[in-house]
Image (tube, rainbow, N blue to C red; front, top):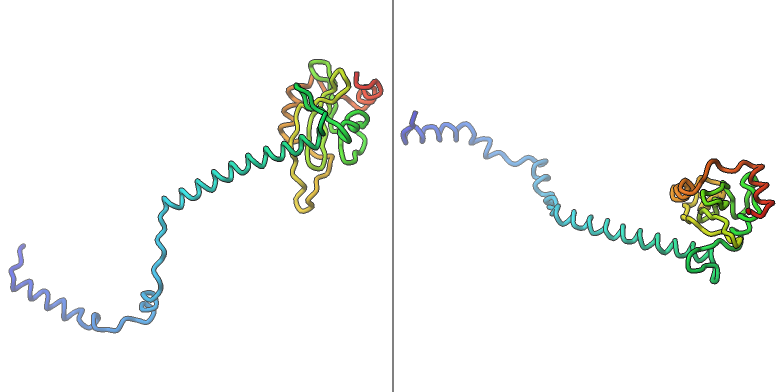
Length: 199
């Protein structure tokens, strides 16, 4: 049904009469306070996402750089100048002494020997931990302990230190799984191998 012009005017007058009082009322104080607050900041989500991607990219590159630096530092501490040749990295100092003499069942000092076993190629291999690193070394024919795997270890939370006799990192466990032939040496087998000079 179409309204003519007179009907429209009459309808407008009726609505004005019904709501005119409301329109002339003052704005309540709580609404004025809302209107007085600064507008919420509009954030461009595309920019925020780009910033987060850039930050995570820098974090990833920073993490890789830190790992490389840590690996270099550990390598140089385990192997002072003259302790490497073209094909291998060998343990020296306290680590080499512990691998030569310490039994896994004996309490360790700065170096703790964890597991001893015979590798598939016939060499004896031993895993170890220190306050900063863990590793796996195998005894070569010339008597040197050739490092097969070295990994950094995190300090115990709240102490800044790590006890030597702790679980081995996955990288070291993986290297052990790749080399071990049979079972780990028991205490008697380990003592016999040590007394025979690991030959």
